[in-house]
Image 1 (cartoon, rainbow, N blue to C red):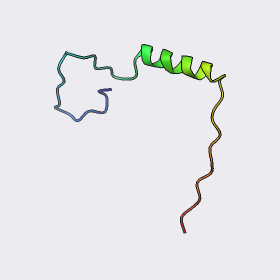
Image 2: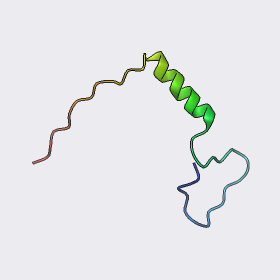
Image 3: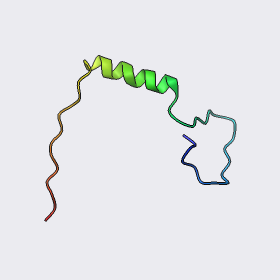
Image 4: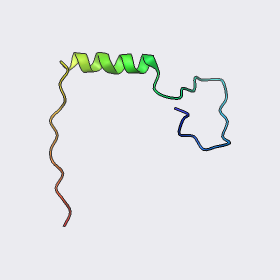
Amino acid sequence: MVKDRPDGSDFDDDIPSYQSHSVQFMWRLFKAWAAMGFRAPKQQPIAEAS
């Protein structure tokens, strides 16, 4: 993604440079989530440092 690049930096046109995630990436992410049954994995709470 190029929206976070520093000012004045240029990229070649050899590969796509999207401002955000591509539709193809989002579709693959959605399909993977569907394959998981639209579940979110359980996460362990983080212990606070003393």
